[in-house]
Each structure stands twice: as C-alpha cells, then as structure tokens.
Image (cartoon, rainbow, N blue to C red):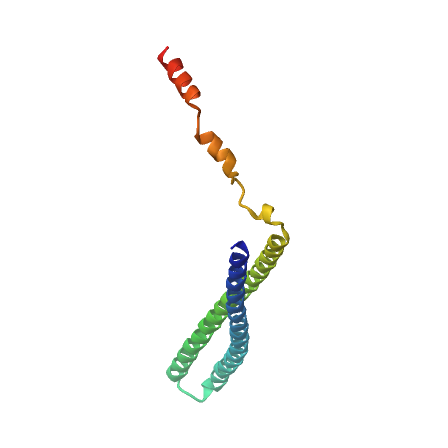
Length: 162
C-alpha cells in the first residue's frame, strides 16, 4: 500500500512539475515580448522628441499659438509613451518574478520526486517485518492484557472496599 502511495505522489509531483515548466516557458516568452516592446517604444519616444525639436525649429514659420498647441499635444503623446514604458517595465518585472518562481517550484518538485523514489525503494527492500506500522503489537500481548484472572479481579475489588 505504501509503495502505491509513493507512486501516486510521484505522478502528482511530476504532473505539477510539467505544468510549472509550461508556466516558466510562458513567462520567458512574455518577458521577451516585453523586452521587445520596450525597445519599440524607446524608438517611438526618440521620434516624438525629434518631432518636438522640429516644431521648436519651425516656430518662425508659424503662428505662436499654433506652435504652442502643437507642442502641448506632442508633450501629451510623450507622456503617454512614458507611461506605457513604465507599464512595460512593471510587467517585465512581474513576469521575471513568475519565471523565477516557476523555476524554483520545478526544482522543489523534482527533489520531492527523488525523495519519494528513495522511500519507495527502501520500502521495497525492507523485510516484511519492518514494513509493519510502528506501534502495532502482537496479538498475544493484547489478549494477555485484556484478560485478568478471577483471583486478581476479586483481589482488586477487596482492596477497593477496605
């Protein structure tokens, strides 16, 4: 029975390990996507900043009010891009944490599988007498404790009355 229990535990640990490895791979892919997104947004930021500098250069050709409006809208776009970069950085940190966590759980599960394998091998190798549960007593001792001779019962009763 104990060997079957160990085998069941090993199967459960293995299944959990496979799922955690899938989560690890998924987190790695997401991490790569966020890294690529950060690079793309960085390029967008550079182009928006270049556009802002170009508006400053061309302000002689346009109305001052029109230039101020353009700069205001470009600064809004720049603020949105910065916000997006911050969100990407946060998401990248979260996926990095998930990745590390999944990796750690996989290591723990593989250690648990090895431990259960050792236990199962030890149980199979142990002689039949050692496989009995700790604390079980032979039947002869149990019977002798339950039965008291009539003389002892009478003596116990006489001692209580005195």
